[in-house]
Length: 181
Image (cartoon, rainbow, N blue to C red; front, side, top):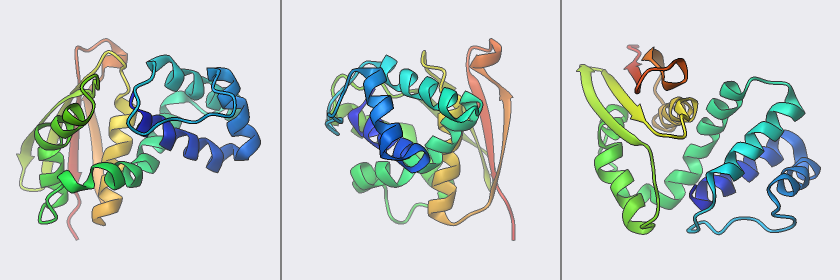
């Protein structure tokens, strides 16, 4: 797991549970007082331990927490990788280019990075279907990132999920439609 994602997760934890909650989560992962190097790579288990800790602390379902974190993650990702985003792109174009431009840049920046495999295809004038594949099965994070990107682009969207790895499907198929005014 990339350090930038875990660093943003710590910010999310602090916003939900305060500094004391962050200290508890760091103890779960063995980090103690230390945080994450943005360009570092860490075991996936650390993210999963923190998510489990959030579930226990809040009583909320893990998918709900992970999706909400995905929304909160977008500003931090854009701060680090925003230079890869063409400022002329619309929201739909951003989704269409995530794999070929942004994830490629992530892999160049961190040779050991393993972002999920995404394939986005235009499903209509204002809609995209995204195929998500990852052994992490964090499709809720992908949906949250889509919602966070929509907020960044100031567009209203609807998301539907035709298939999901968590239900035994080989991939998650997520359709994102920009709502008309």
